[in-house]
Length: 330
Ligand code: KG4
Ligand code: ZN
Image (cartoon, rainbow, N blue to C red; front, side):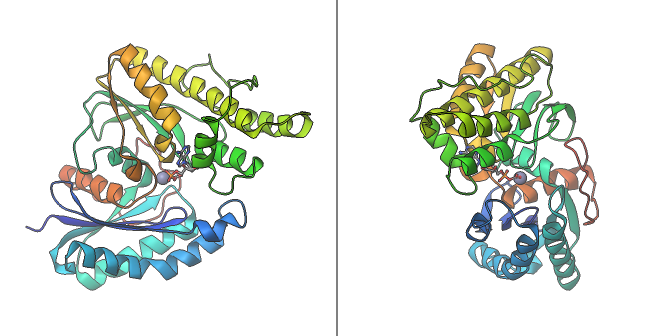
């Protein structure tokens, strides 16, 4: 039987389509970015995002099939993100997948975007050993979870307000670094010194996070400080985020002894986070599992890979939108 899966991901501002074979190898991966459109607003403009997906999705599907040298008939299934995300963006992907499924006579599986990120670490190569502690840090989400297997996952603690990625992006905007600012803040931090004592939110308060206060602290510092050195602000901000992420990850690893520590989501691309996580894993004697940087940010290969878990379990969620999905849901 054909075991090739076509994945579609349109939960936010990237139109992504990928084709993955039965060995988890990526035959093609298209990510059509909308950064140029949203950067003029300093953040994602949801209506524009949905409209741009409509324009980009079919050319992306055609390109993915062509690069992979795959015909619709060769597919076992179509996997599509059903949430969480922006509703207009999600609907474009879901309706496209449903239409293609009808036209090509293929099953369509609705995928939890967070489960996709979780699987991103195994794209192209199995990397994770179980049990594992997972830190998901993206533009939309931040949490720690305990994974007994690819499908048995327990949420340990999430953010009470902003995600880490959102905080990086807003600090990037305050420092005039454009949108999205995560990468630029991460890089600028290397050039400065962590001289400003920004807060370490909820540092000693269990496994939950909060980042809105830190965001405000950076904003107030920029408003009221007489001398402003952007490099030092970035460095001090990143140091504060790192301390919180590493301390809580360490706590999770102590409470739930694990073989691996996994970081996924867009902020897993952070060089600073990768370095700090490596130090933590050495100290805790666990293996650090990271997705290659290309697969840390949103892509459709992770959605196709997550679909394989679902198929193996005989679970096939409908391609219906669901904005409330958490990591423990299918
Ligand atoms: O996972 P993702 O592509 O989208 C969501 O599902 O949200 O994550 C995007 C986030 C953005 O906030 C972006 O600024 C951040 O990941 N990001 C980074 C880096 N690269 C992307 N944050 C810190 N350092 C980076 N190198
Ligand atoms: Zn994402």
